[in-house]
Image (cartoon, rainbow over all chains, first blue to last red; front, side):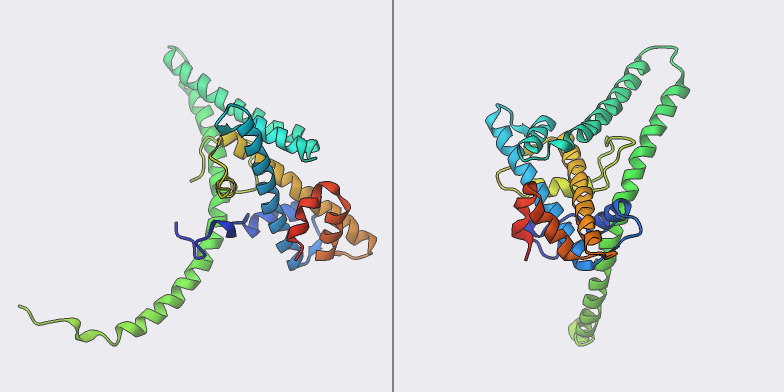
Length: 173
Length: 90
């Protein structure tokens, strides 16, 4: 996916995601546009802050991959310990889903397991994954709309270029 | 690139692929596990909620109903843990 700015440093969390969170946190509150912009930037900075600290913690351990534990320690050391209990719920959710999947596949190996049960679990997992994909797609859609606008402008420009080059064809039959 | 093995009910409101891209943008970071990304995304959500609420308190003190940028500025200055944000206040 090519980005128009081509620079990793210009990455931020999409505005739409931030707007949604602000709306859910402060329903019925008007928020100025430049305030929203600042929240987007602050959120990005927060992610850099925590991941940088987690990376240092990871380097000090013998591990090569940043683990949830490293992130949790980073939150603690940077004064965000109050987030830890909620953040751990995400981990629990991960384990629950992983456990379900493992149970489902081990059951497959046993005979007499109701296929309906497997099917039901599978559909549950798919529904959840679909929901997240829908959210992602929504945000990508917003970005695509912007890209489409730019493409339209580019198409108009190149159309006027083509009009002048019709002498390229030769009669080579 | 939506991870199909994402946590179920508690989906993050932040796009995980973007969070991952932000983490990887740091040249010092080599590898970050998927679960680490998940919980970082959740932490960032909590951060946004917290700072939005703090800023709203400032707006209320100023008897305004619209949250302005200066409310965020005030919230940032008031909280020690938000000191890292002072560079974004331009």
